[in-house]
Length: 258
Image 1: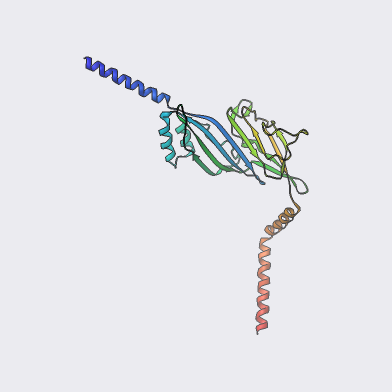
Image 2: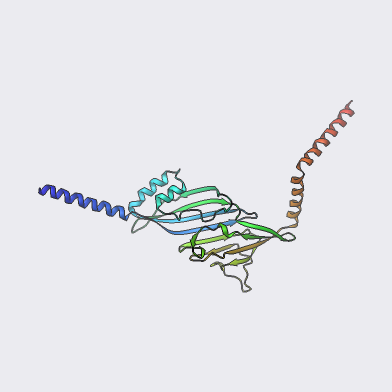
């Protein structure tokens, strides 16, 4: 009986240790960095990095999931028990494209567990709307319906420990920015001329988000665009003219030889 009691106590102790180890296993998302790189069209390249911390008991599971390279984004959400691992810039009129998902290696901490950075890279269409506002001048307006951060009763909101960045093309000028970015500070005249990177750090309401910039088109680019438009608008007629000209040259050469 004493042996049986000791055995029961041992099993109970081992069970308690196992339950404690299971309870101590966790994945915690500690930081999110979302960068939107805008181009001189309506598409954007988005790069997101998610910093994940984990306990010692979770390291082997993370490495096992990382070696399974065919795991999808939804499967990683389930593995990490975190739905915030997702695309935070979406296409309201379609899906994202060219998605690359890269779970990084673990950086071990001195005290407990480790951290890893998961990178999500993709392209999104319809991020900006563009209109011609003056000769050779175009205005691009950020489409705030692409934002997919934290949804609150008052609208879109940037959660804590989240950084949102927008990079505009070189040679463009931001003309309307709201709310004011945490970086950069405006000049003494209140504008952001010369800046291409804009960042909002955390806990920022985005329900009235506004961002617009202008681009000046060179005379050469305008001329090329004009003639390209003519070419693509009359492609069949151009090919027909080439064929007729080639046939005329061939007939002329044939007669000369005879």
